Length: 166
Image 1: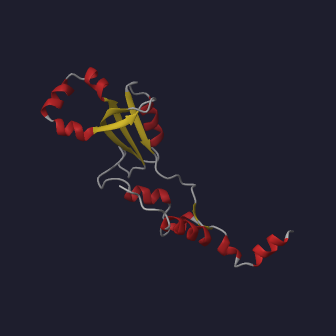
Image 2 (image 1 turned 180 degrees about the vertical axis):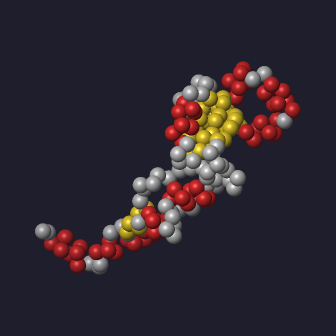
Image 3 (image 1 turned 45 degrees about the vertical axis):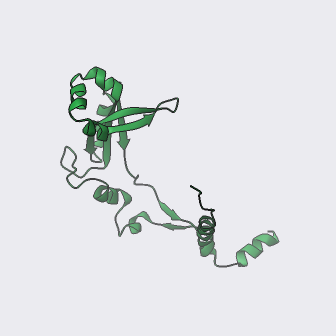
């Protein structure tokens, strides 16, 4: 054992140097991260088709140019309500990095038990649809807090950052 290791051991309490791990059942007052996600991440009236609180969100998007080809009534909607169409438009980057406009078509919620079936159904959709799946936190993820020294070092670094010039 080197003298550096002995010096390190004698400096402070060992539990102060290590990151503290909080058990997932104790972090949210006895609730798991999944239960907290179900309680706060969804709108008040959001339900799965089976009637339970959702765990997963499925959002469907269609490229704007493809939607104009597939649905001739959409052009009429664009003329009648351009602000509404603009509110539904989201930009995703293509393979070259250029922004491409997509229109948000639908949002569907699924509970933990119905999620596998909903994923299979989402995969069977047309090729011009893009489905974004938000599964929320996993049940096995633990929350770890940094040691006090690491936290202090990060706070000092942030406090000493130069201000951005406009």
